[in-house]
Length: 440
Picture 1 (spheres, rainbow, N blue to C red):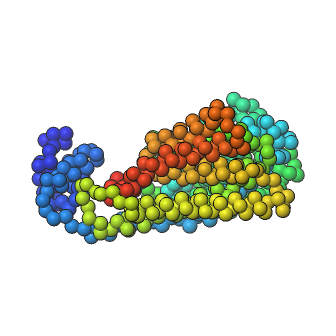
Picture 2 (cartoon, helix red, strand yellow):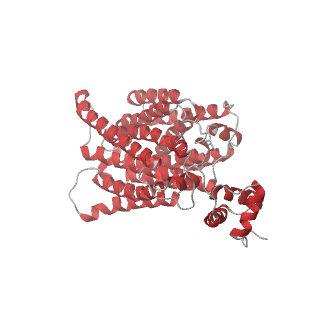
Picture 3 (tube, one colour):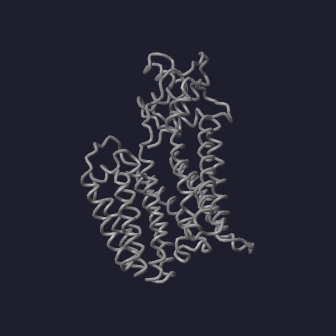
């Protein structure tokens, strides 16, 4: 009998024969159907649910231990250090590059480089670097990521000339930093950026940026070539990596689509305003990692049933709420401290609306990242698309507002669009755990 013609009664016979007992819940039945008969996953889950609906035996609480999940690597501090280095690059390089090349040309370069960088970073993390052995994957098949890098870096100079060359160097430096952080060389990356920041004020800025880009390529090659980590996981799917690249690129466009922020024109102001929300989002992301550890642990012993009731006390919802609270609190504290202390040290700062805009983007980035991790890139695309549409359409309303307000409005709307399905899914924690939490 084919899998398509298999009914609940026949499925029950196969499952009970395979287990030598009645299945405990619909998921156990689905696993047997998929492994024994090759029934597609969605069809297997549907048959398992139909079987359990017709089964009158008493359902028991789960007694098995949750699947062992590794704690988040202790590289969060290094990621924060690398982030500070990247933001310092934007802040410290904008003014000297503007004097050497003109602020308009630098603005155009940053407007192209930021979305391109985020797209490549999301692609690399989803396909390779998001795993413990990610750099080893790059070493195993280096031609593919090398080809991606050559195309991504070689295309801007061909299209944009000198501006494109700056785009290529900035992209090399920022994306290369992602590889170095994954390799555990975040401190080295921070040192390189710090030295380049000093040199860009003393020497010819374009030459310094070009030399730093070449050095970054050499460091990435060394990092990949010397990695001896054993490969224990499969790389991410290309389709999913491509979707992640589109999401990252869309978030990058959101960062640069509001001209009132003034990338490259206002010197270090945008970068200084960006730093508080980015550091806060790192802490929120670390807390969100508990979805992979605390959530399965909290669900141990919960009764499995085909129709699970919605519960606002879902452990997943508490974790998400904790991440959002950390993001808001730390952003507010760091933004307030920056606005209070920066003038004392002669650092220029933007208006509070710019800090608020970047806080909204950090919230949207957290939401879209979670949607992508849950295997829901379409909802992530809907959130990012709504944000971009609102940001681009805001000026048409002719509402008097300060710098960054269009970005803040767009990111806020996108965050709401993305949060709604997350809340709906996590109201049923058992279903969320079974269908969305074990993400590659």
